[in-house]
Amino acid sequence: MAAPKLVPLLLLLTIITTTKNVLGQGGTASWCVARSDASSDALQTALDYACGAGGDCLPLQPDGLCFLPNTIQAHASYAFNSYYQRRTRAPGSCDFAATATIATSDPSYGSCVYPSSASAAGGPNTPTTTPPMNNPNVPTSTTTTPIFGGGNTGGLTPGMSTPFPDSSRAHSEATATWFLALCSSLIIFIIS
Image 1 (cartoon, helix red, strand yellow):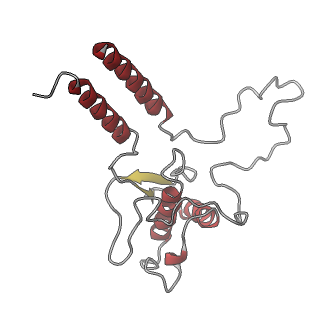
Image 2: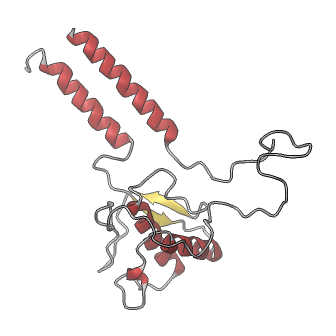
Image 3: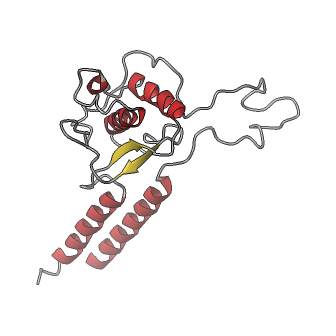
């Protein structure tokens, strides 16, 4: 059996490892792929954004390793994943106006390898030029009402919903952080 002083340390290491895996930052790989129920028009818009905002779309060119199959679904999946990995799998980086989803099985095929980390995707990337189109996650406004209210609408425009779908795991991250803090405090209490 481990020495009494090592038991709390082993417990803390187990908690940290578990927390990292729950948050998706541990050893579990994930990929961002196009949803099968997304429309071709929505996928094309999101594909254009992903390629213009820093995703590596060179493999999707006619002479690239991922050109075939030449479908919007396949091309969008590769571009979405490249963008997602280059943003270090940040919450919200795999949404593309609800046309993408997280996959836990590798979508690579033949010579087309989908990166599973930021380093494999060429590292975190910030585009050097302005993307050629608008972010598909933000709906275009057709009204002239000020964003923060105006006239008789009241402050912050009551009734207006958020323009971004909430696909993040912020709640689980906050819960895991509090759990980790509680367990750490308990271990310190036991040791002293």
